[in-house]
Image (cartoon, rainbow, N blue to C red; front, side, top):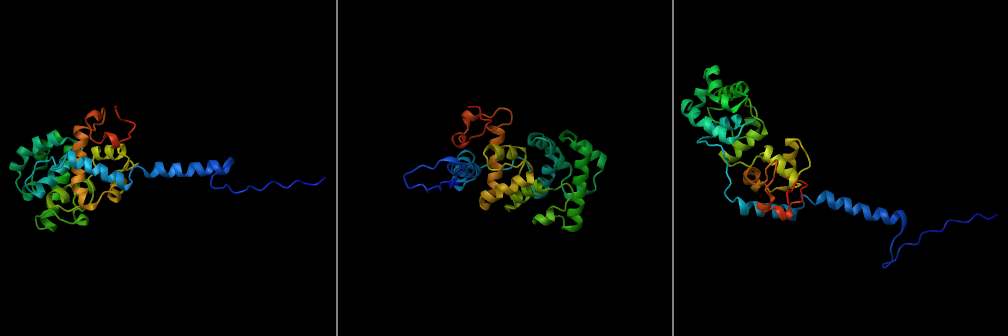
Length: 250
């Protein structure tokens, strides 16, 4: 009995539809690519930046300070603490310890009590005294301006370094990633990572460098005032129309 040869598929013409697996495979791939890329595509990032500029054209660091060193101390104190509480503490702290030398040779127990309201006061005291001494001994009493140098200070990681370099010196060394920036980066689909270092790298790839400093402040302001953690105020958000977060309230 002769064996029938399977019919060869004829390529679909310009007006014809594909059928079977070939048709399904062709339909799925573009869909996955669109979903993966839609969050940080250039035109959407530009729209987000424009909306943030409209809402917060003059956003700045909320930590009160007069010198780069004071900002360094305030930023160390801000870990796991609100900026409002830090400002309450530093209003009496900075007059009492006006220089790096005053902090470097402070009585640790006394300093602990001075900064106790900010929490984690033992570790923060150790970091502040250690950073102050290193600034005096290795950097001539000045907070260093280079990322690789400032990261050698006790208690200083990239978040603190970016705050000081950006706000005090105007150096766009990176993007500050605090709890607000972590939350908004995910809600705005600018990053799908959860690690702050990876989130920062994702943001640095899509945000123009000349916007890094302002962008950091704008996201922090927006996170505090509108896009709050438990109940975002989406009805008041000028980003609502270009936001497709599952956590939206409208």
